[in-house]
Image (cartoon, rainbow, N blue to C red):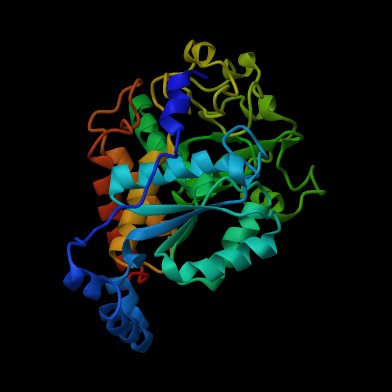
Length: 384
């Protein structure tokens, strides 16, 4: 990597800043002792005041154990810190949300959960990041049950939200009904699971999920357990067997969330006319995008140097902004669907080269925040 990249990271990418002036003794006496004691006592008497008189209402924790960082894998908490700082930078830049990187030196789910629960009083939300499957499922589920603030694993739900947004517009481009699409999800990890769940919630029933051993199917894969067993039960209504090649025959959509070169080039040619291919492994996709574009009508990737980048930054800043604005107790499925709809709506006239807005489109974060806040109120999880 070039020296400019290292220079940009030198000393870290974020810092704290003061929101109030500290000019003299009067300022000091109000910001700290003795005046701060009155605020502390008021919060002790009424904890709800903590949202009003502390950073809680504007701040999230970005928490990782460093086990699934980007495409780098298990590189540990310290090496993960530049990514968590980057996440905090994006929160602040795109949605005005303050974020604190927290890199935990443990991979034990019990310890991760206990650590986050102990830290939670200072934050209005928890963004879990780069925690490997299957621990990421357990950690999120347990924290959601224990905490009364949003807990959101971005590798799962951020990806799912943006995929659904792009798919809504891609279906418009090719003139197909969203609910009638035949979809193959290649990859049954954290992202693949969340993508499948949000597509089911969006009313798309014909989904086939594959992993490295083939199609997730109850009849032919009795060894499946946990999350994969649930996916097998809820998907594959036509009882497709074998592998991703067989699953793609006649399919309208491929969503790749697995790894490089996991889909043979020739398999794309067996898909239905006007196919949609989202090859999201990054930096090397499941199939060469240029090769896919020779057959498919719409192609998206996770790369910033190609059209239609599926990037989580379109989702998570606005999702947390909206949740914090209404002091939501959780991020539920209705809020995720609302976020996807808002992102899709930021592209007025979708085309094969633009089914998703640019990450720098100023419309996106405010639109997502408004939609998420509205959905939170409508589903009864908002406190204001």
